[in-house]
Image (tube, rainbow, N blue to C red; front, side, top):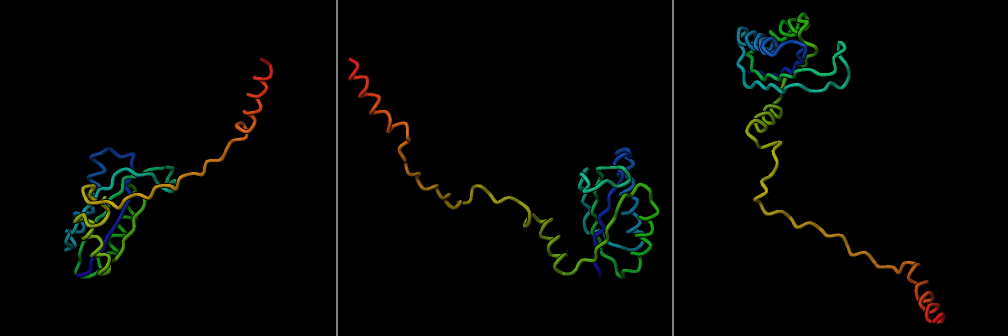
Length: 151
């Protein structure tokens, strides 16, 4: 089976129910075409790199699926192009390394912070600074001497 990943951006002006219904429409379309949904990720509202249709943000979705053949991809992308609720989309065929990466990411092996309970390497301390006598100290003994002379 071939494995694909489609990421699409839904217009944020829609209501919450409409946004979820839009995403569910495409998931149902994949299932109807005989695909197996591996993972669905709602990434949420994000800023866009550049304005699209006078919008500066969008709701991101990522759907990973398997299909026996890639013949249905053309019809799937045509549905995205016709839908005004979809701002952009990108379909990618995953190779074995992409499949493994996504699997590891879902299982928490990639992208998580390391436990603080593990022993950390000691931090290097900055070398001590050399102390230099400021110019004001050099003038100070002369000032003391003048006070003694005045008394």
